Image (tube, rainbow, N blue to C red; front, side, top):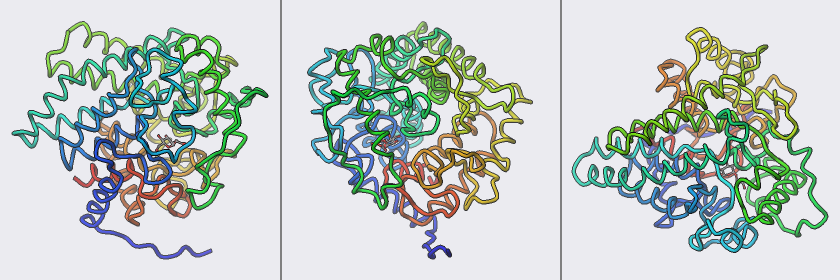
Length: 448
Ligand code: 9YW
């Protein structure tokens, strides 16, 4: 069927639209992930939102970091949700009960009991750079944020290195698919198949389904039962990190999370050097980075060169052709030949160069794979925030051309001005929530 004509905004209109989305989702202390579907602060969303806010208002970006850190647990974990006072999302604080059963969780703000990918050092880098560029009060605000938040982010990286390295190799593990940020990615299908919700799973009602255009864009009820069961297991052991890793039904070495951990350790080490943080902590970060980089490289499939997740419970590799396969491009460490080959695969006909794509940006699952579902969430759609992340990291790693191509093509995709959560790779149609904050934020950074 022919696609309806959609508007194409120019740069100025697009940037204003993006700033308008962030302002509209701003409660004053937090920019919620989206207006209706996600009326709270999500951990990795907040980091990307800070990247966008830094271009608009350094002080507002700094406050976003402070709000996020006000939810940090005493043991260092940054929880995946810091709740606002809204109650439009399930599972909310009543379901998690983190502060009721775990001494590390703050009583206020309410928080969830799992984490998300560590990209916060990248946000701090952006805020510091914006402050220094602007000078004056912005510079002072950014430098003071650097001093106060650096030790907190160090504690967060240390928590991951200490509690989430079950194999002792530097491969960081997730205990719930939500922790990966890619909730229902087919990467997790086999691991979820062994999660058996108990008969005593307390009943619940989903709140997400009436907030998107089509239920087929969201995870299924079967998937939700498993998501909720894992939380139930965690609640029952008081969210004790090591206990969950020892006994939980889901434990997967997440190669994408690991690459972001390595990248963030490097970025935080650089920021630490610039702000004269303790030398042994900076050295520790570099050590973790090197170890996790090696762990990422060690997951590569000898046949395809793509990185893989490792199901720790089942003791087997996960070979789903997902965007996570390109994780080495995020953290670096490949030989020049291997890097060239992996970039060529990314640009090739199974990925960005697939002839059916509306724009040439990485889909979350290869359109050539049987697992590909073009409108279902993390099973195929293109996510602008993922494109930004690859573009940023690849530019940092010297892969300028691909980084610039991803930027240009994603801007073409989002020039419809909907700032959708994700897009249909074959038609370019907006999917999921509209006015999604992180989409607006990364567009702002790109247009700055
Ligand atoms: C949910 C907020 C979050 C993102 C996740 C994404 C989705 C929440 O939305 O999860 O209930 O499905 O998968 O990565 O942080 O944008």
